[in-house]
Image (cartoon, rainbow, N blue to C red; front, side):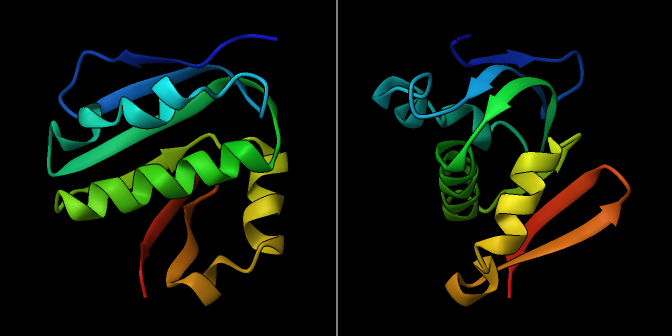
Length: 113
């Protein structure tokens, strides 16, 4: 079990998410620490170093998108683990006003429909 870390990558608006995105690793502090999402007009979150995932990880991603929208920022997720990608599709996020579009083979963009 690896706690979630959000690491700023060299370029503006680039972040690497490290650790597990699960019920046991996502804390209230993780959810509340979203100010990094307003550091640029477009934020890219690379999930290549994410280990285990479950629906809590998907819920966190949705919260990040909602927060970013409120700050007029666009959130792009790269290298999404297959389990999270499948959960997003199975969850029918379109019914909540979030379109899950695959822009590249390893990138999902959550945007307002």
